[in-house]
Image 1 (spheres, rainbow, N blue to C red):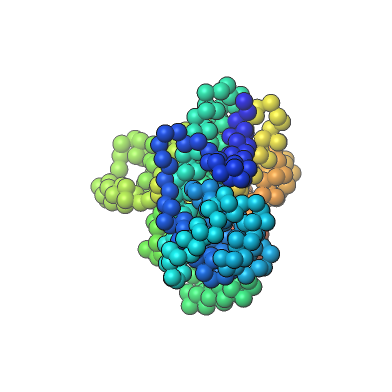
Image 2 (cartoon, one colour):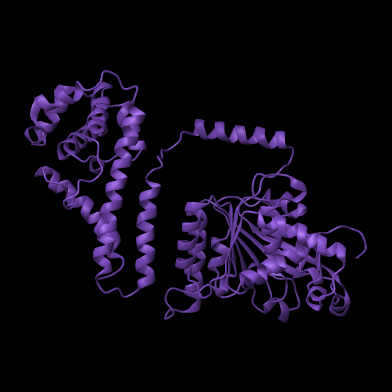
Amino acid sequence: MSANSLMADREKSRSSGLKSRKRGESPFHFGERVPPHSIDAEQALLACCVIDGGQESMTHCIEHKIRAESFFKPAHQLIFAALLDLYNEGTPVDEIILAEKLQMRGALDDVGGHAYLNEITDRIATTVHLPHYLERVRDTALLREVIRTATQAVEQAYSPQEDIDQFLENVEQVFFAISENRTSDSAKSISQTMDVAANLVQRMLQRKGQLTGVTSGFTDLDKLTFGFHAQEMIVVAGRPSMGKTGICLNMAEAAILPPHGKGESTPTLIFSLEMSAEQLAMRLLCSRARVNMTKLKDGFLPAESQREISRVVKELKEAPLWIDDSGNLSILDIRAKARRIASQNKLGCIIIDYLQLIRGTDSRVPREQQISEISRGIKAMAKELNVPVIVPAQLNRESEKERRQPRLSDLRESGAIEQDADLVMLISKRKDANDEEELAAGVVLRDLIVAKQRNGPVGVVPLAFTKNLIRFENYTEQPL
């Protein structure tokens, strides 16, 4: 049995429920145990829909994703389906009109006739407690959906699975979809949207140029981007040894420990497919404490530097940072892990180091197609978890061969990266760089080329790179 059939089975159980309600049967057998439900809340919710004429209460039901299947009692499912028909027709509702609609559908006797409709409407006198009834009906429906989905997953787990990773991903997606159903959604008029935009303008004026997203730690870059924003895919690309991991660690540091104590810490998750968690922690520690790792390995460190390391250790231990150094991960693995951590801790940023090390889900397809799938998966994860996702990527050799600065077309293995990304930054030597002088220098200049920004301008941000600290910093005009 295919792993994708789990999603199909879930939809099939819903559609079969429409037919079974006609026969007065339960659309899913829960066994001997009685599943979560509240007949009182269901009756009260239906009564609200009738009392206010089937308009405002039905609108709230739709916005909160209440469906006929959300009701446990088959009679209530039939009544809500009739109310939904009347709502879609724009017909006002009372007990008589509702009874006529049920009669036309051949369901009046199935729900208990006029007597049961009158019993329902007599339960309450006002719709003031509608939010409580909505929440109660929705929550018990979600619990039943969890039971139903888990049972189907168990049944499929007993069947042979061609792709266990895809099967597990589908199971997680279904459960995550159930969780998302807790949130109501509705289309917003332009007047509401403009009010939000106007408030945002006022906040930006009050902040006098302060960021609206996660800081990068680099002043000139933040001026261009106003920070990294939720749902953005941010690519930091460069040739090997140009400092892709280093600059991403600097960005992570700025997120969890905002410069000069400005702003709140942003909980950050790093997937390190190349380096171990211990290596990343050591690099982050030495970079922030401004300690030369080579001298530290030799065992020679001034007392002042030792005190600074102790201070930074305490600082980082309290920071909201998680590192996953599992190797050979696919984008499905990464999304599953990120989803689990996000369910336990509110994440504000994710970093994946680096894109070309992510394993494709199907090794038989060309690598370019794998990278395209990975790129789409990263963008989908950013939207799903509502966080910016920063991902370093390799550039091909063309810029080196032609002795020029890199451009978007140099992204290695797939054009999908530049299409999916909201922000693409390319790390490069400066145009006037002298290789011999750079080799001897302790601090060198680098250009961070903002080659694409979906919601803002492009440009070049000069940065200073301190080699022995593997640290990028704001560039100043002072001599290096």
